[in-house]
Image (cartoon, rainbow, N blue to C red; front, side):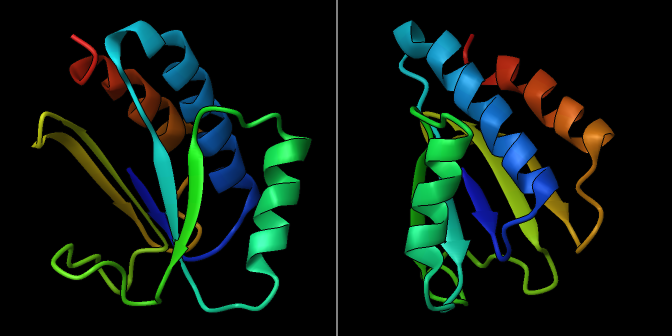
Length: 118
């Protein structure tokens, strides 16, 4: 589960890699989704184009309000929040301010996918 406030190159890279992991672990019922916390006009069309351009097939891209879903308490200063969970138990949680999501962070997230596909 990924919450994002902006579309960026680093987020796109993360989503592509999570999409690949989701396909790789399909037999273990891994699912993935990104919730964009935004009210920007045209975002839905932009996300459709991003998915097509980057061949994103497994990871669901959705849009919610800026505050995020009720009860999730997504940090207001986090541009990207990643929660890896299995059967409602959080196995890893990452939060990144603007500009902090980089290749090393993405590598750490992808590595931790193993925690949820045991």
